[in-house]
Length: 184
Image (tube, rainbow, N blue to C red; front, side, top):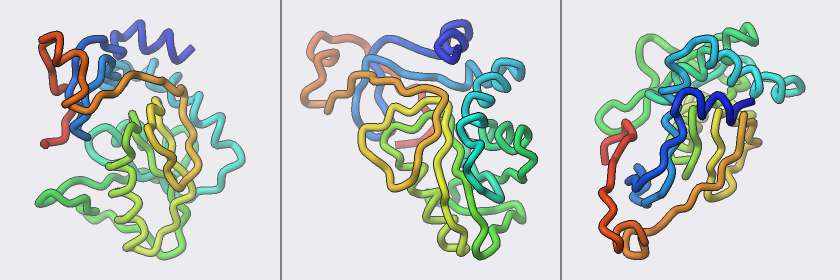
């Protein structure tokens, strides 16, 4: 079902992409295209929520930008509060009066997890407040390494990655695009 939702919304892109990690890829998942449709977002996140049935958590935290809607929708479907971290002077932080209580069990929510950079930065903020990260929820898991928390995703995609110097797309002069929101 999630594959159909990604296709219906043209969220799965093919081409030559510069990822925020600096790597290049021949595929990119633009979850914003899926999340712009509330009915489709609800269905995609329901797949994740079903997998969370045995996980105890108190709040959902998403990193801005990609995690905000996913965090909100997970919270809406589970009756939990949702908040988000955002960059201030290049560093993830809680703002807007948000607070995490010591000992609160926190689920981190993302749209796509690749290197885990935003997830790790979010977990550091949670831990600074004394919260306990109990898992990561995302629509698309395209991780290239294991993260230290359990992963609950709607789908796992294996897309090709290249270091810039080894990129076959660069060698073939395929134009490159930087579709993500994080500044490099």
